[in-house]
Amino acid sequence: MIQGALAVYYREMALMRRRGFRLLAGMAVSPLLYFVTFGQAVGRTAQMDGVSYAAFLLPGLVAMNSMMQAYSMASEINISRFYFRIFDEFMASPIGPAAYVLGEVMAGVTRGLAASAVIVLMGTLFGVDFQAGPLFWLGAMLNAFFFAGLAVAMAMVVRTHQDQATLTNFVITPMAFLGGTFFPVEKLPGLAAAAVWFLPLTHASRAIRLASQGRPVPYVEWALLAGAGLLCLLLAMRLTRRVQD
Image (cartoon, rainbow, N blue to C red; front, side):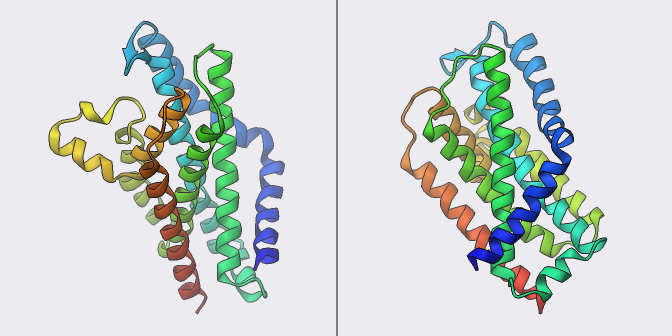
């Protein structure tokens, strides 16, 4: 299975290298606009949770950008399914559904980490005070792991690109704004504040933010992200096997 997963992963990495500049530009443009607008123009002198708003915002952008890029694997898979029939070729090969899913998830995690690195570079250039240690990257990786698994699972469910766009609009976009990216979730009204704790991005934002400030991250955050990611991986394998059958 490992060899099959590496074959799928190698294909996705070859595509990433070929797209190169366009992919990096896509990773940078939206976060740069958010960072300049909110972190610099609006929050230059503002404080949030005892740090500058720019230092508060940057980990949230890492979580949001890694989520977006990892979940974008769903669109890549749909293109290969509906237009180029590459998915059918994979399923007809000895690779198998589990190896296929694992390879795509690995590619999604790589894209998520690359997107996180873009934000870190951006924060460094703007002189933001933060720490990008091992726990910081662990949070970004687990966040990308969850959303890459979710992307593969959702790609096996949708029938058209319109369905994919609908899922993104109703699931990913609200999560990007309500998952603690731009403000502390505690600031929301009571019921809404309780509801957003069920969003994986909320825990990813919190874990990455605490790590960026050199503060201890509760073990429950790691457990929730890893457990949710594993469930999505298993669900994606099951759905892929169903599509193959």
